[in-house]
View 1 (tube, rainbow, N blue to C red):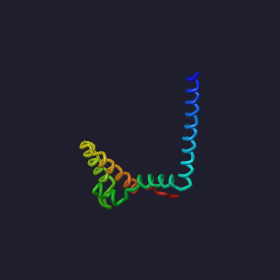
View 2: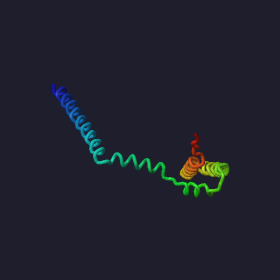
View 3: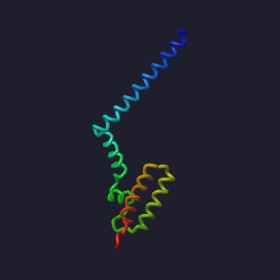
View 4: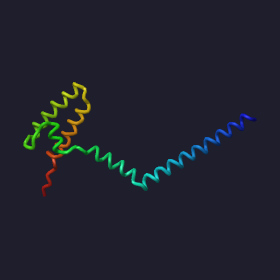
Length: 113
């Protein structure tokens, strides 16, 4: 009999605790949305992913504004492979982001009618 009462007490306590956690989580989401904290986090992620500028990309790859796209690709391949062999994932990522940035500049779609 005591075991049964104890089991019921544990189940009821777990249910109450579970409901309280869910309610607190919902309230935290509402608070984040009303204060704008959630939007700030999303904007911060977007800014961080697109933080590289054309000038920084050119510095990373060591090219000038007059450099052709083929030369940029050669520099990219050389630097990417060197960093792949030496194990510097950070530098390899920077080289790749620089190429992506310059690629968007060199390959802008031409709008012709």
